Length: 190
Ligand code: B4P
Figure 1: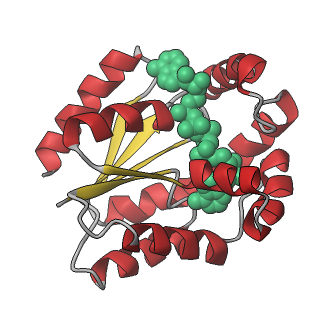
Figure 2: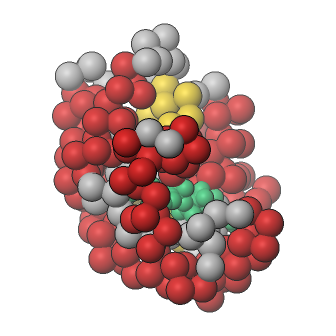
């Protein structure tokens, strides 16, 4: 069993790297962003509530995200491990993930913090916004997302630092170079 948390500011490359990690390590990919966008597309109650918050660059409430994640873990009983992409984003979520895993005799092995300077984040997300159709890939929302990340998610890095699981990855290299650094960090942690 190998459980990885991948974290980083919006546009840091979490989703991009998660796709590569699941292929190489045969893990189940749980992206809370993808799950929420699927709920919005379905028009569910969760989706309706999340839609406006995401468009403003704000977080969806912890209790809703935690419930979604707990259900997603239960739906994959034969998984060899998980990559948690974009979760936990708050300390409350990080504590909840620890207890969700503990009750299943599992644990987080490593937290990858993909670190990219703010000017590069803005550049990447505005470029993606030209084709993504995402309501949150515009300048005002991107700036709010970065601010939300700094306020709410930077303390999550310290949470994993205290557990000795925080691993900083230099994210402003090519996709291949970032992936090579990530594989080295995972192989050292398992
Ligand atoms: P996410 O879907 O997680 O959005 P994201 O932070 O933008 O990450 P994403 O995976 O899409 O982008 P990536 O960095 O890979 O969340 C969206 C919203 O949902 C949040 O703002 C929040 O409102 C809500 N939400 C989600 N999870 C939540 C939670 N746990 N609690 C509360 N609310 C939650 O890549 C960005 C771009 O960079 C791509 O275009 C990619 O091609 C490019 N890129 C990647 N690597 C690159 C590289 N090395 N060089 C150049 N470009 C690169």
